[in-house]
Amino acid sequence: MLTPVEFRDAHVRILDQRRLPQEEVWLKIGSVEELSRAIETLSVRGAPAIGIAAAYGCALAARQAGAVGPARALAAVRAAAERLARTRPTAVNLFWALERMRKRAEQIAAAGGDLAMDLLREAEQIHAEDRAACEEIGRRGAELLPQEGGVLTHCNAGALATGGFGTALGVIRAAVAAGKRIHVYADETRPLLQGARLTAWELLQDGIPVTLICDNMAAHLMRLGRIQACVVGADRIARNGDTANKIGTYGVAVLARHHNIPILVAAPWSTVDMALPDGSRIPIEERDGQEVRSFQGSMCAPPAVPVVNPAFDVTPASLIQAIVTERGVARAPDLAGDLQRLSAKNLDNPGGIS
Image (cartoon, rainbow, N blue to C red):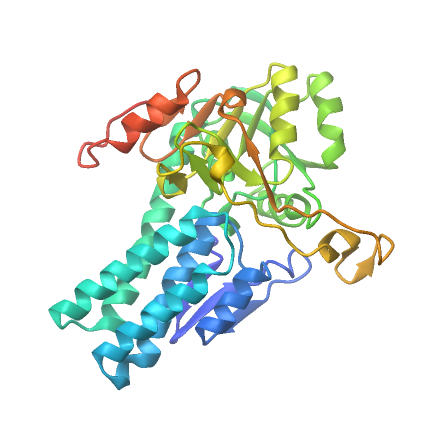
């Protein structure tokens, strides 16, 4: 299964998603600063994948500082975590992974362990857990899709955005594997066209039927009855079920509600931020306006025109039918209550809300 990030030969290797689908280029990253810039410039993107990359970044810092002694190596890991935390503000998986790596580093240092080796194992464990979570999300979410019909996606929440398999696309992959006849409508997702460049590419690689549409075509296709469900990922989910995802998701959800089409959010539990009461507290990243004025170096708007370029928006819980996680499925009308019960779930008992 495709994975966009890995640790190999003392480097973090990243599949450069800016270059897809024209070419597959792997970046060999040898420093925390290089990795931070790769996250900021979207060479690696998607909330789970960013968290995995950051975990490998902490392991890289420990490896490079190993010869200077345990105290200085631990300081290097802390500094790496601080730098990586400044890359992108919205996806909570980043901060979850960095906090896990920081705590593990302190435990290893206190026990006199091998910081470089043990932190790499922790990062690899985070990676493996995410892949397994995506597969479980796929299994649970596939049960909620119709036996046949059109499914709309927004942005890319596939293997490229995770440790492998994907969240929203994992649901679709699992549904197709179970024999459901799904046809995906991938909207292009302006301004950076993650749906057109990445989701369409992934689904074609898998042989899953997919049709690319412009963002402004979704309402028309819904009215014509071509779409029976919407499945999206998430970058942060608040305690009440409000969900931040790629800009334009809120509009898709409003359209889906008007046309009585269910919208499902698929995300690992690390995306759920139980410390935030609602979506109004989710920080929304504002990106460079040049991403809207131009695309891949070609200008498509007057250079001096002002631009508003939020990378994400927040979909209210009231518009979401279900949030699918590896712990279970939270369902309307009580997303908040279900999320609370899933939060308290005994992970040694894999049953739960579904």
